[in-house]
Image 1 (cartoon, one colour):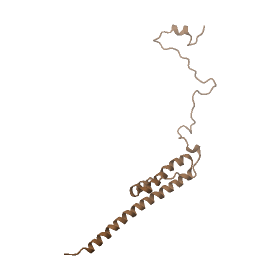
Image 2 (cartoon, rainbow, N blue to C red; image 1 turned 90 degrees about the vertical axis):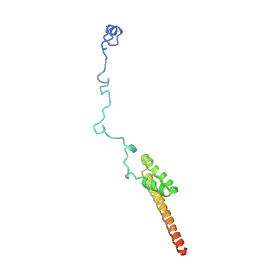
Image 3 (tube, rainbow, N blue to C red; image 1 turned 135 degrees about the vertical axis):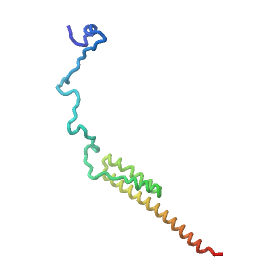
Image 4 (cartoon, helix red, strand yellow; image 1 turned 60 degrees about the vertical axis):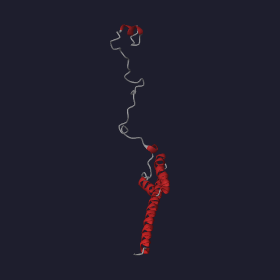
Length: 143
């Protein structure tokens, strides 16, 4: 007679309201643990980008401050700055470290150009108003 818990005659004798015996293996049939145990040093580590490759340079800054300033001051140049700043992180994560550095430098360059052109245009407009008021007040005749 079989004593397996899966034997239909044995399970028919056990009342339904009582717990049924379950056959749980303690270890795997190969002698290893039934689940993977993480190594002590790897238990709380984060996945390494770039396949564990160490970047030769630190992660470049996308210079979003210059990009926003360029959008406020002179938006046509800011579009190029924004495109370059947005490509910094994707190039960096793809492993193109020097491409990310170049795009960061371009974003900063276009951002500064946009800000300085905008400030220059505002200064030019203020200078033109000052000259216009000087000319108008000098031509005015007293009554």
